[in-house]
Length: 266
Image (cartoon, rainbow, N blue to C red):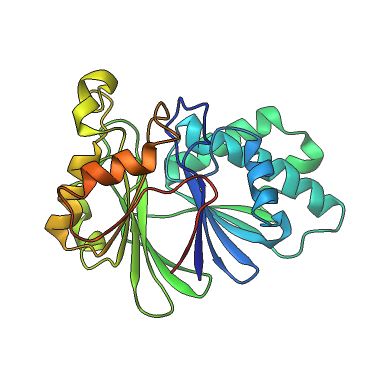
């Protein structure tokens, strides 16, 4: 299996795309979030991830930099259904409150001949915290991250080799996530900015963490592989070097600060 990082930025970036990624098993793909616009279509095309091969999507929460790209995916996949070019069912997983949000936005913005597929060929599936579903043949457990802003879920996934990948959404790790994140081989965690630039970017006021805190957490939990995302973009050309330099002061495992489009073998 492989992990493709489709976007790495926070809500306001212009030099990269908003944070989202795909987990793939050959020609089957599990998309996590979709960024804030139709650029998701261009990125998927560049990474050779065909819409016809996406049958599972998870949306972590309602913020527009995670959600609005989904509306474009629903529109384009709905059109392919009408054209007889999409086989099977698209499953969109999210917490129960988000189901209503997605239904409302799609009903207001997508023409009826496409939106009619929601509930049939395009299924919105509410999940509860602690609920496990099988996706790409792997158990995926969703969990409430205890957000202080908007209800948000993360997930942990047991890969075919029994290794565990966990995603904490786009807020700092909360102790309520311990049962799900503990024992992970891969941790995907937000890092809004460098710790030394916290006074500039104000991550704490936005309920985010810095590179330092994310790395200290991974070290404390004994995580062997840490991927940082959901960052600012003012250092985009030097981000990897700067973030790794700060992070390695606090973390002894393998630290990754990916660029948009970077691929990892899981």
